[in-house]
Length: 163
Image (cartoon, rainbow, N blue to C red; front, side, top):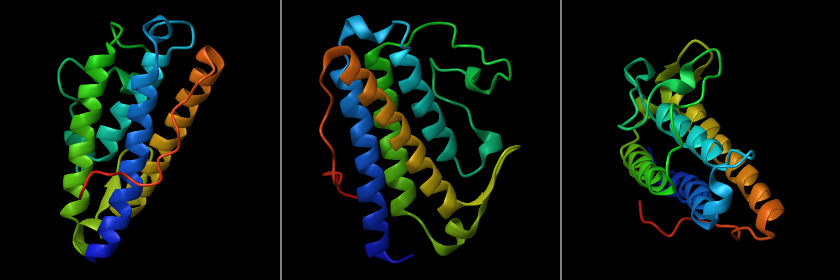
């Protein structure tokens, strides 16, 4: 795969992850575990970011202390509220997983099918889908922050983290 295309893909995907991190970081403690479920919206996004970055989705298992509760068909919540520090750590691991995946992309990987019971996409389409999902939830969290504290992080044009 073309090096310039990898750089572009990473700069934009990384920017989406940066925006998610900025929203999580800005959230005050008094908003973390309220009816808005700020922490849960952030966790859901991170869980699926990790899952969608897994080349073989059948082998996916989130790192401890996280569980597969997001796959529960009844919509069960995780058994506890995750802390901001736990989610920032998960975000950093996911950012690295994304960066490594993009930096090692080949045409073969891009054409590989990413399939579970709901989706059957090429890996390229899954990367774009995943980036859109992260940006969607970053925007939701920014709205909650705007409504809760009348503040929200600024737009990130490109990640500053090198591929």
